[in-house]
Length: 257
Image 1 (cartoon, rainbow, N blue to C red):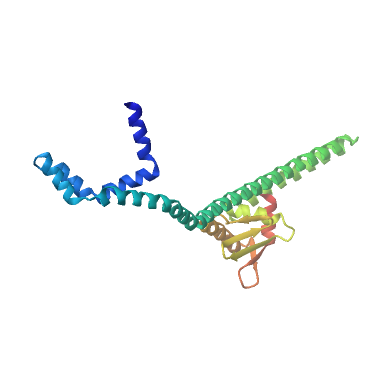
Image 2 (tube, one colour):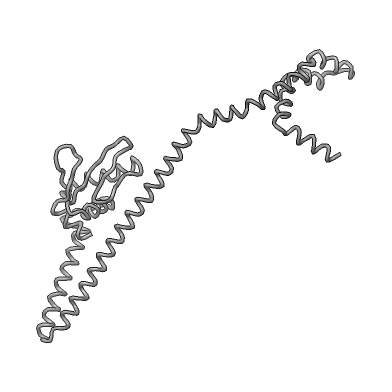
């Protein structure tokens, strides 16, 4: 008996028989309702059911509707798939573009960080070489005098670097301003460009692009660029507000960062 019920259930769940069953209920719901709720003898209930149904509504139409819907449903799904194909492709492309921009941004940051540490390592190596050259001097008095002068110069350089990076003429720079200055200083021209295109707006400094993730991200770096101009660290070229370059103070601060 259990196998029979499973077989009937699997047949009903098949698309054709499922659609036919739904069509049967839709066409004969009045008769089914009266058959269930009518008070009276079984003959009276069957008579009420027969009054609302016919052979067409009980057999022919449900089978025809089930077959028709079974044939049409794949084409309906195909139509919806074709209509939704372009929007879904566009959404996927947007996600891919966003991930691509994030990857590029991470790569640029890693390159900038690597260049920074490489410059620090080169400076340490040069210092070590100069120290070795001083140690090779045989005249002890001259050696001590030279070592003292070098130490004074290094302390002066470090003091100037701290003054420039933290408080040069009471000028303080934000994290975004630092990024723009450091990126612009990587190019010998020290140029900065504010670009506008159909997809949005960005700021290019050296080999780095800022504000490409969103309008909010652009506004953050655009404000930083305007602040750099007002502080005299960056000057505008022309009257369109699209080209900029580092000033002498901007170069000094960028070298100290």
